[in-house]
Length: 443
Ligand code: COI
Image (tube, rainbow, N blue to C red; front, side, top):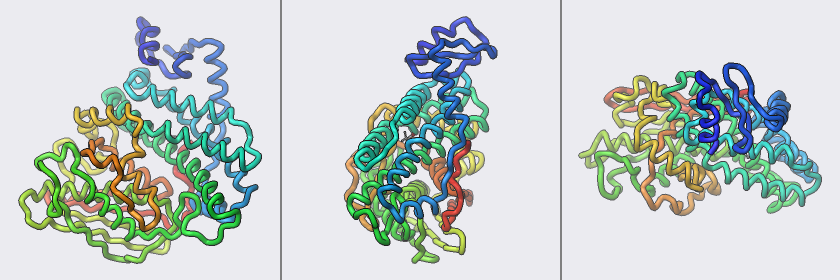
C-alpha cells in the first residue's frame, strides 16, 4: 500500500531521492533536498527525532545477570520502566536509518512492512504509561509479548526487501544497514524477553530467588557440550531441506555424520542459551548437509568434530567438517556468505530462496518458529519433542550464517570461516565468557 501510494505521488519527480517519513497513512518524502510534508508528518518526525537524538543505554551481559539476580518488586518495576523507555529510543534510531534509504529500496517488497511494524511499536511504547506496581507490570509483559509475536516476520521481510534491493545499493551500505537493523533487533528482543522471563521467575519462585540455573533469559552455567549434543539430536530428527539437491527420499541414520566433541568438554559459562544454540544449530546444519552432499555414496560419512576450549576470557568452538569447503561459483570468499548483497553472494537473488522468504514473510510463523529458535526455549538438558513445524521439509532462506555471525559478535565475540577447498570447512566461534562487553548496537 505504501509503495503504490508513494510511487503514484512521486511520478514525474525524477530524479527523486525519496525516503520514508511516517506510517502508511501519513507519507512524506524528500526530493532533491526539498521536504514535502503535511503538519502531521512534520509533527510525527519531530517526535521521532526527539527519541532518535537520545543515546541508547547499552548494557553488558554481566549487568543483566547482576541486576536480575537480586530481584524484588522495586527492581522489577525499575526493569519494566527501563524497557518501556529504552525500546522506543532504540527503535527510533533504526526508523531514522530506514528513512535515509533510497526510494528504490523503500519500495521493495518487505521493507515497507518492516517500517510499519517499527513505527507502530515505536508509537505504542512511547505512549505506554509508567509502570508502578506488579499488576501493571503483568499488563506490560503481555503488551511486550504481543509485539514480540507481531515482529516474528521482521527478518524474512527485511531479508527479502534487502535482497531485492541489492542491485541498487552498494554492498557495503546494504550490509552496514542490515547489520545495524539486525543487531538492534536482537538487543530489543533481549531486553523485552529478559524482563518477561524475570517477571515469570518471580511468579514461580518468589521475590528472593536464591542461586538458580538462569537469571531471566541468561543461563548462568550453560553447558556447551550439552548444547552441541542437543542441537545435533534436533537436526537428526529434522527432515531434509526442500532444496537438498542431489539427494531424494527420506533421510536414514546413514545420512548423518557422527558429531565428536573434544577439548574442554566440561566448559560452562554464563550466556544466552538461545544465542549459543542458534549458532551451533546453524553451523552443524551446514556441516551435516555439506558432508552428505560431498560423500553421496559413502557407507559411513566422515564425522564432524567440535572442539571446545575455555580460556580465561573466552569460550572457543571449532567446528570441523569434511564437506568439501565453501568455494562455489557464487561465493568468492567465505566472508561473502555473511553478505546480504547479491554482488557478494549471488544466491541472494536465487528464485527458490526468494520464494522461501516470501512464504515466511507472509506467514505468522515468521522466524521464531524455526527449529533453531525453538530449541533455545527448551529447559536445560531437555530437548523435548520434535517441534510441529518440522513435519514438512524446511525452506532454506540463507540467513543462518549471517545471523550466527551477528549473534556471535553481539556481546563482543567473533565467527570466522576457513575453507579448506575441496576438503572441508573449519568454523571458529569465540564468545567472551566474562560478560563485560557492552551490547554491540550502534547508536
Ligand atoms: C523486533 O522483534 O523487531 C522488536 O523490535 C521487538 C520489540 C518490538 C519488542
